[in-house]
Image (cartoon, rainbow, N blue to C red; front, side, top):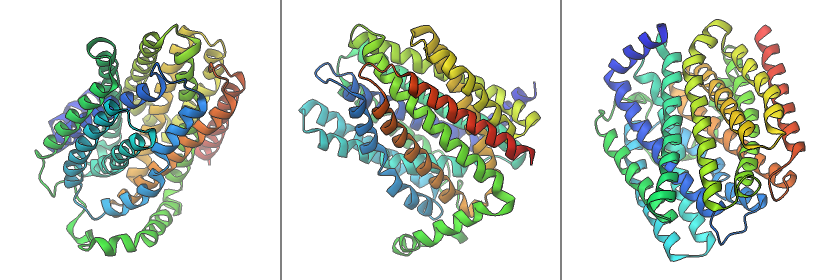
Length: 420
């Protein structure tokens, strides 16, 4: 098969292989850490969790990305990306350890959220840097398959990390602090793995690096405006449309995730451990959808084009989300998790490819940071909408129907754009 052959070629590339190792360890640690936070906020027996509480937690942890994100992009176009991976993961290891201590100490919630925010804020630099660095280790001809393998492998690593966290929480140690400490160890491993690459391998080019940090920060607004103008040029309009479509699909995913959390906590489980096990199973099934998307997308996007492939993914979600979600039963919801994993990751691969192949290297860091900001605003907005629509047990037919209509709108818009 052509996909298998291309994968073998990619894995022979030392730079790609080492960058992939950093991604797997970093995102695996993200999965462990995020599950530790989720179980502490949502599933702690002493907490009576509500949709509003989940939305508030997401807002505290994600909205500040809108402030960090633009600076991340400007700095990523100046700092050596290998160094970002090294020091970013070291800092996250330290702050994750602090989070574990705060969990044990039973401090006020605001102090816990400050610690968690520090970890997730650095995450913006690392994830945007991984995407911006990818074209430096593969040729343009294999960029689609690289986008299929690398981000999807990272998502699978995060899913596996989440599964490992559930196992530690349910089997090894009945404490969220142990889970978060495991995440800190994995962040440290990610930092050490980055040392296997030369400091200048991942760019940006020396000529594009401004030596003074103050100068770079002062020019943030101007540089971001230049990046947006670069993306808005006629030659890159398809990439801009795909970013808008992916943002709406992220909104849909966020709303459904909040619903799933509440269903696992109350409606579909008889206790905390049962709810955690069900949530872990749903995330694992969704991870299987990510894997199928990685295999299917290069072929489908090659035959249909990235835009039409995104339209098809959104259309599938528009049909199957209400069909599988409205019964509010365990088996159909697990099937829906698989479908959402497939269509969301398939669309993301197509979007990443369109952006990377259209945007010049000097602009990639800031464009991917804008990408992250849009994702986080959409996710937090979705959590807020879900908090207004969801009852305490998580069963909401209006929310499911609203999400299905949004998917249908994305499908129609992308299909129309692709036919122009």
